[in-house]
Image (cartoon, rainbow, N blue to C red):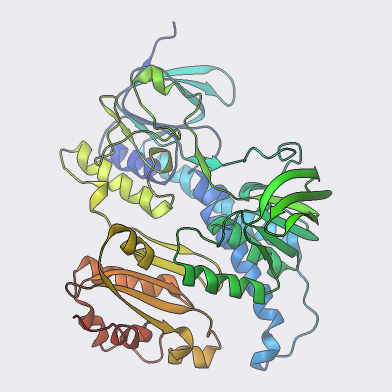
Length: 464
């Protein structure tokens, strides 16, 4: 058997939380190895967050150019060069790769490019990408393997070679008609982007509303926005079979309330959820248990069922956002040093980067009802925020969820310009446990979008 190489910490996967932990521990003097099979720095800078937002911004620019006449700027016909869009995105990725390689080099953490698999407790065999194997053991091991796009079991789908978000971001041509399976955050972001690039777009959602985790009024507003841009959205549409080949001719047979129908297009994007990258990596040989869906079982301290093994990020069932993986890093970092930080003590915000964006932090109205939490709800149309009169960004609304028993802010949702930035202000207030009148009475700069927080919280019904 190959002689094992021993490290203080071995990290399987170089996603956001894992790489930050590797750099921190190595700079602290520990011997650290990070195993990454494909993307230096993980998926966020390579095929997910940064590249997708890069292309979404290119789509935003195209949309703004088409609307320029409304603001007094006269332009000619607008067209989009998808090869240039891809080139701009790729240049950013190359810069990210250089940054990450430098961070590994300067920190002293070793980056090993290859596929890792547990062969015994805290022992990982690596099939190196350039050939050969290495056997690594760690006093402590961190599993940071992430997730990949789910491909549902629909007849003909696998043979159709449908796009996931990864392949969609590599297109150097404009699909004539992009069919999107799934009305969640990824599907909606990509649908709007390609519509703005110039594609015809159809979203197929089996459920009764887009974004199933959101309140119905939020989903309805987003539906209206998408349809106003010319995106076809089919709700209660269950895919039965896929025909043809994505990139050539593709069709989806559907069951709807009005009977069976068929949607024909040129390209097919699948965006129906995520699956953990835990299958086939020998977790059972290391004593690391997974749940029924394949996510690693980790407690509130991010400890797995195996001694000395931690889990970080989406593969551990953490909310599927890069900023959560960053917090996972902080939790594991401090707990490795004897602390007691927990995942159940954090307030997690998120943003869907549509235009306008959707942002939420804390409870929605529906979640509060399902928990039996008595709340007061206030809303404010974005058209009532004076800033939008100047910019023309009047779509959407703000929504606050406040405790019925006291004046705590329990949640905030917003569809509107700068929603993510406004949500961050509310998040800080929630973290500081400020009662909502503090925001209602705050002196907020005029004209800003955040100025709308005053009248929003002014609409909170009184306590009975």
